[in-house]
Length: 152
Image (cartoon, rainbow, N blue to C red; front, side, top):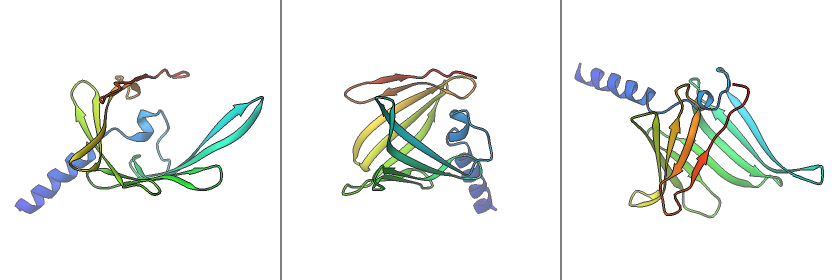
């Protein structure tokens, strides 16, 4: 009985771990795969810079993603694990990111190459309707990124 109760608590905590990617970016539900292409526009000509393929879980979180440059070379791969996200880059150590919810619509994302070497930490602030309000980089540069949404 205790094992069943423990598993139930873990499942509930895991389902409340972070905002769904689709909701926080304003997309509709039921999407299983999305391709995001980034272009550079110079003198009225589009040049493909990178292509990112996102695969979602059934409840709208990113399960895996793969980013490729215009020549088809892999730039980054991400994989969602139980408590963290693993980011892999060619010829580099894997990068592990952990997300924790804080009070007042905030989400803290800490990244490590190994557990003892913290590389980066950002705090994401959300509006009441779940969209990103601002992102604060909590390391030496302390960058803040503001977001504006149009058409709802």
